[in-house]
Image 1 (tube, protein in one colour):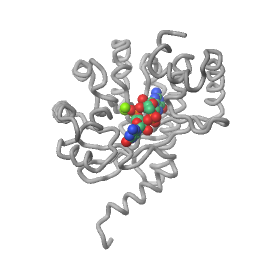
Image 2 (cartoon, rainbow, N blue to C red):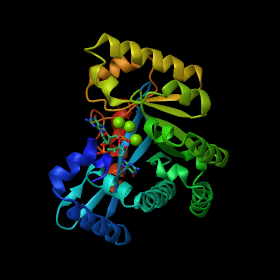
Image 3 (cartoon, rainbow, N blue to C red):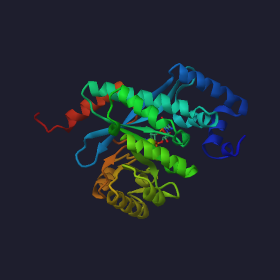
Image 4 (cartoon, rainbow, N blue to C red):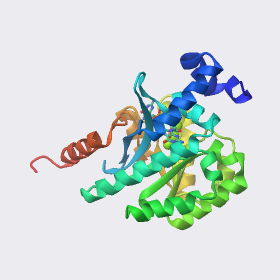
Amino acid sequence: YSAKRAGGGWAIYDAEVHGDGEHALRTAEDLRRAISQGELVLHYQPQITVADGELAGVEALVRWQHPGLGLLLPGRFLPVAEDHGLIGQVTWTVLQGAVRQSAEWRRAGLDLRVSVNVSATDLLDPDLPRALGALLLQHRVPPARLVLEVTETTLVRDQDRASQVLAELADLGVATSIDDFGTGWSSLAQLHRMRFSELKLDRSFTRDLLTHERAAAITASTVDLAHALGLRVVAEGVEDAETLARLASLGCDESQGYWHAVPMPADALVEWAAHHREEALPRGW
Ligand code: C2E
Ligand code: MG
Ligand code: MG
Ligand code: MG
């Protein structure tokens, strides 16, 4: 057991699913097979403009359609992927799926911004910008319609290399987002050093917005800071109308959460988008 596995998500993962290291190893083999056989699937969660309720984009979230265990959430298998050198393959599978899906939606007249989560290890791969550029070109998806979400903890690990890869991705025209903002210790330094295009306010602030004045104060300041730097602000984990209203009064740009929609398969998203557009039209149309 590595130190990493002694705490946090790993310990939970092991206790719940595995119970022993050997089982984790089998899961790694299982995951390797799953990747090649297409068992990783993407669900998409809408991101809604706060001002007018439009569908602005979606976040792609990976799931493992496991033959025996059903649909597994990323918390159940991404730590295994990280520890067994499979995260790069997972990311590439997700990027391919998301870009292909984006192209398909575009052909059907649905021009959605698509966000993909990338991990620390991915940003240490100097080949990522070139490969991603080729993928976007192949599917004729404008780079700016793809957003790469990076968490703060990702960024602190090897700042120089990660910054270099991020800068090359930015040169490519791909948008970048600082995910779970406010949960790391280096938020301001990251904003100072890197040119992100979006900031995702962590769910812990959104959740406490109505009940904790301190969370509201942090949110208000974060929105102002982000706007001063030219970043779009997306709030995560919005679960009720009151929170959405408060986010609107604070000037937050976009909202994502169960209040709007849960993550869903691509075809369900298309139906959701059509229904959402109809609902947004004034009565009598
Ligand atoms: P994240 O990027 O912060 O994604 C948001 C998570 O919050 C998702 O969980 C989403 O289902 C959940 N969520 C959305 N709205 C609400 C809400 O209103 N309330 C609550 N309680 N939760 C909400 P999910 O899909 O389990 O993903 C967890 C994390 O796994 C993600 O957090 C992201 O860090 C990581 N992840 C997901 N997909 C990928 C991927 O393709 N690659 C990588 N490297 N990481 C991924
Ligand atoms: Mg994310
Ligand atoms: Mg997030
Ligand atoms: Mg989060």
